[in-house]
Image (cartoon, rainbow, N blue to C red; front, top):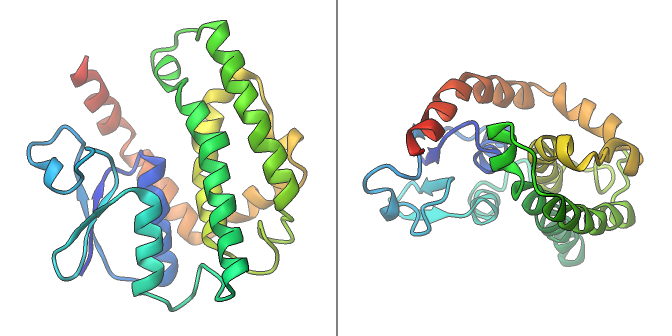
Length: 218
């Protein structure tokens, strides 16, 4: 049985977790934070999440885990079989991460500490987010899912990317629901799914533990 290592307050942890639950794969969860002794054996970069496979190999990086899950558990596919369509899913995943998640992540420390971010940083972040908005508007259909009729890994990826964008929005004042037509309706539909609801409940249950961990680092 695979073991998913990390913590539920992490949006990156929730990407492969959602994929495993969607596919009905039995797996164990190991609540662990990156500073734990020996975690470097699971993730050389000390990042969450990581995965121990059925045969004892260790993998890390959320996108790698998502691809591995698809390769090993192909039932209820989350990637198309057609090479072009398959890579359109990857394309949107990468764009969501590069131009929405990562720039907003630069603001997380200010969000967690309730401190204003420097104006220069906020403007830099907004400039990158604009590229993400333009990219998603060019590629996504939200009819009913991001890339059309089929629910894919791109839906899972963007859904959890938006949790970090929400935190950054209090400083950037960028309303993605207004900037990306169809986003709000798509997000509401996915939020109503039982898998999403389970992940959300686990995230909330980990809130106190996560912020306790953050406090212990200071």
